[in-house]
Image (tube, rainbow, N blue to C red):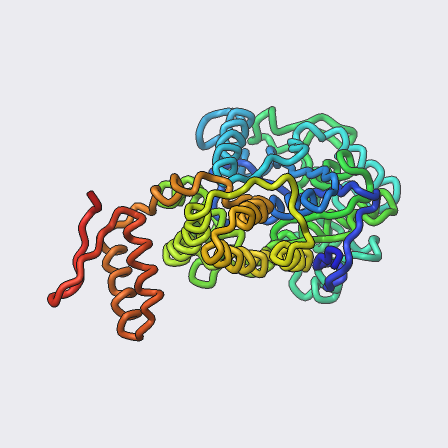
Length: 459
């Protein structure tokens, strides 16, 4: 079966083939870099890390561009609050991002353009839009995009102009001819630092957020490319506005496939800094090893909502240990290449080729691990490790991974003891035994007696 990808633009699964045979060009909206990355950001970058890994596993060359937004209202505000330059802040946060996502095994993109390096290209696109009658200069010095003059507006989000008008606020026109219009070039404000301003034919100012990605994607990948990705929250208005700008300027389709990953949620709400319900990658890595966090994210389908909790991470850790136990039992025989006709490999490929179906692919890994345990086949162990590698897991030393456990506190240990007791009561002895083994692997020895179950640290 050939690869099929869910295309937000068509709202359907479509067979994928690159515009240029053998070469995939992919742009993903990256970070607005004013603070540390949280787990929701990791989920987005992990989703497209898996996408580019799978495309390469299929023998395709991938040019993967993920930008950095390094000029923005929040960035300016944070730099002023800290009393440092914008560049000092964005350099610091970019380095922190690279460190944090590198720990999770997220591979660097082919190109990582910074918005401030592409201001001339943004100004060129704005000038083209003005020449075509799609942009106008407002009375307050801004340059805005005239949404109603672009016939295809709303095709990505499925929002009609009438629906959008229902939510407009006439009181905040801000120099716009229509409340639906959005800013391409922001006129400079006296309170903003000099490094946040550029001279232009439109007056001194800085680019709007949407025009940044249009200019960077078209400059690095061309006016039309294969995949444009990002979080589902960017579908509207950011990606809708990118289409309006880019296609309005070039007259060509911007991207053939639009791919969006789902949210990370806490208590059924999106994890976000604005809500204050987020955990930074660094906070999570103080308690859980990086591969467990990666596996927790990867085993869920990229388009589904992902519920974050310690219980889910603990479960991911236990599940990952079962895979590593198979690699610890049998030393893997390294494979020169994966034989995709092999039954387990073929099932794995079929799952991944259906819109990067990692849940099905992970299920194949567990079936394969069971077969390794049964047959003690070094060749199958090698296949398990190789297939895991396409997801960025199972590449570490098995014994080392199994020796490093989650730092369990008393409450967590007692919770697991209670779960084991419940499993035994339900005569689910396999689950009870697995909990005991998992605790033992983390240095916790259980002692059963008539008075109940106690624990002590392994010698």
